[in-house]
Image (cartoon, rainbow, N blue to C red):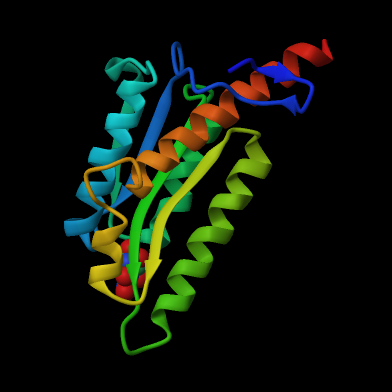
Length: 163
Ligand code: INI
């Protein structure tokens, strides 16, 4: 695939040289462990060196944006992958946690210009979460890693083109 064709610019799935932080929520870690496996598999597949990947765990999805912000503002990473699992219970807690996590992560990427992937599942059931955290490329951690590699490549390309 070319990075620029007559249908516009695209970020290539080339992670060589990228420095990536992965922020994982411990809550529902029977799922987030699986999302991390998926993300690490994609990072390796697309050429990100394991020494350039930093993984950090926070208590739950609500805490993910703060750590993502810290990494994104550090100047030491090119992209952040957020991994979490918010599974609906009997109270409105789900909506606050999921909504604030998503809004916080979007704010981090807009405020810092560092791509942040939203690999945070928001499901009604454990089973729905398991289906999105399997061993294949539909694992949402895998997809989140692909997203930041693509976005980091695209941003770098556009920044170069602007010079
Ligand atoms: N955190 C999650 O990551 N997933 C959930 O499903 C969840 N639920 O359902 O409560 C959850 N809650 C904890 C929250 O993220 C914070 O850690 C907690 O409120 C302390 O700030």
